[in-house]
Image (cartoon, rainbow, N blue to C red):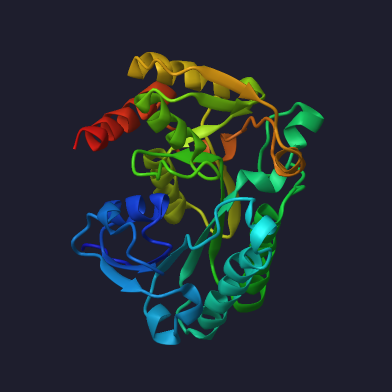
Length: 314
């Protein structure tokens, strides 16, 4: 006897991860997005798209849903300079809004919440020990602080109302459909496009820091495994190998045969105050469930370069 297809709700479903997930899911899929700006990312013709914000969701939108992937979120640390309340509104209040509907339902949907490695701050540099789920959290900006706050609220609602959940702390996620015009988010993608154009590449502190990049396809594979195998727990999802940022840039220049010059610039006072310097991940917990990343850094970069070349030539 076949299992009944699941009903999915994906908030932030036209983002890099949400759209990739929607394209790979089977079942009844409802995608929530506050705009159709990135509609081209959604290739699953069976997915239903609703243009509204999480704040405007009602009880009927959540009823009969089996799994909620709550991707709707702010995405960087810079909002504090222009609108310090938007992180709280989006990451905390909208999450509570969703949970309030879930608690009233007779059949509670499973809530899967993508959090961020930035909740750990500079704990790696303090301890020189790869970060895992039990490492001390010490967010350095409003964005990760609100994500950590949302984690605690989700766990509270689970204890009070038996809402099943998963918290997935993601490292630096990248992919071919990430935007390339925003230096505050998707810096790697931005620099790939700049290299293809032959423009000067400016790197904070010469790129002498380690990042943990993981390709979006591997993240989606991890989420699917966790959906099936885990409940009421927290997992760190990252690549097995961190890599020095300037090594990635040198690889991009070689791969694109770019004539771009690389220029080292001093980090701003703000960046130094909020940035995680180096990050190394211990992902043994999720690996014990049978997952591991399969897309290496070079393969991931090649996918992006191939697509960006097509865009430039179109």
